[in-house]
Length: 402
Image (tube, rainbow, N blue to C red; front, side, top):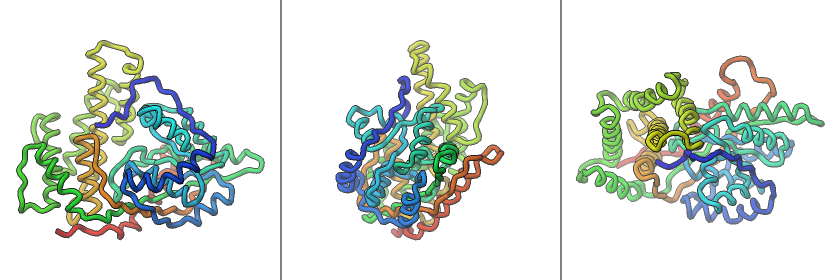
């Protein structure tokens, strides 16, 4: 699994505010996105909505779904289309992958957020950038890459919190200003030959687990069988044997089997409502001792293993229930095989060409005051809008035919 948790004291990385480097990067971006990720120039829908918000001087927060690693680059192509650069919030671990990447991210307007705790500096910076309204701010409300273009993941409250903080500041400004959120739906479609793309990956994954290839097995059945095999292997690891029942029932059971012992040890058995929140809480409890170098070498190794358990639970949660049941689309099969390869080797090969449709939704006006209650209704409104927009473009994907 990819290393997304860094055992070093966190230091906030602010964005560079100049315009020259973002402008130069936009010239390089289309060829890089096509070469690196296989994504052609997107089609844009609803551009006039975003243009109107920018012309009105609003503080603009763009909230896209996050189904592929290339999403930030594709969003930057939206900026190139508008001749407008963005600020983007990104996980701190991306800044820790070398000085060159750190420099490029900063100068592209990206700033860090510490996902394993409350990052007041990141929240403050995002709110300030929205208040100043010099550029739109991009925040992915799911917080993680889902690799599921047809299913929206858990939408966190951070977007609503930041937007309301900025709305409060803008309301007090002279003259007062407004903050709005534009939901952005990214819909990818695959323009290549699916069989030619994924059969080599299936061959490789089947060989890794010692299987012979069955020439009479359909492509869909091969993908399903591999999923069953991977799940059974992990059930043997955590339960001692493969479990009965449908996969939709077994996945939550396995997640609980992974996380509950950790919650007993680190959180006195306390459990959050969602898997994403459970993992975040656990990481925040496990990481400080590693960052501070506390405990024996054996304790350090145990905590690293427990962080790996958290990452594995997050991987399990990212598999949408019933995603390739019935007659799955070309894109669902491709995403599932990409997920298999990435989860077993930390890297998924690029399948090209990918086409992306970018839909900019109607502006959601943000008020400074949050209504009373546990959940912010603005979060629910954003989630509902994104789901509706993704459903509206689902017709672009067609079922796979053998």
